[in-house]
Image 1 (cartoon, helix red, strand yellow):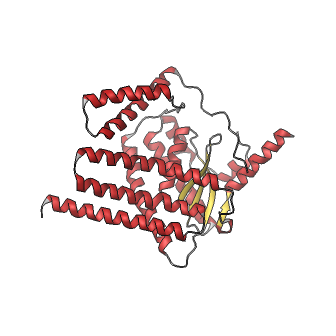
Image 2 (cartoon, chains in turn red, green; image 1 turned 90 degrees about the vertical axis):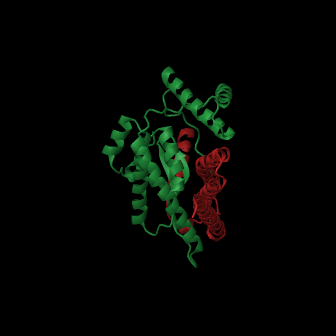
Length: 124
Length: 204
């Protein structure tokens, strides 16, 4: 088997597993109970799925110009996915879409209550 | 509920040399992105990249981020190895939770006061947290250096405490990779702080 054939097989495996992970992320988006658990699905399997697709593409294309662009896509995905999750989580946090009955503990609520209490003291 | 009011940054203003150092790091990063976008390393690309980077830095000055440490290659290698395997485990975990029939995952929101309260450490830890198994960053409090983390797939208080310790382990790995000597000492000697003592105390 030539090196090209081996690289093609590895690329195919990467592409398929990346696609399957993205599918799993999609299923998770539908099946998870609330906003915050869904953000987990958007952050983890989706990022790894994309990275695998990028690796698959890089192995198949094998040209420097294309690979550098793919590297950039990967870096920005890693850097921005957590920020997006943070922004959505923070914007949606005290909201009825979040199932508090499934939470074991909520230390952010306590923290926000304390901050609000301090503001009231300052005003009084 | 209204978000917390903005507070003064905990960082002191940067010295001239530190600002210079930050600019050099930003320039290097921007030029690298530029060259990667063009895809070929040539003098024309590097020089045009330098020009674009200089304009960007002059027009959009970066907020002062103190980078007091230095890069430790071995710690960096260890961090990335663990991070990539964590990313695979995290994806598998979420995929399994998604496909598992008749199961509603329980979760928790925990506060983790970090031991090293710098903007850089807060940012890096929050970014990495979102991509490792089980956790998602919800809110970061700069004044106390506290991260509020949403944890998926926990079933008991014990597991929550175990998870809190794993966040501290992640922070330690990041500090081992990019921390200064002082920060390294703090992480190594502090152990796992007691979160309740922190939460009951007055925020500074």
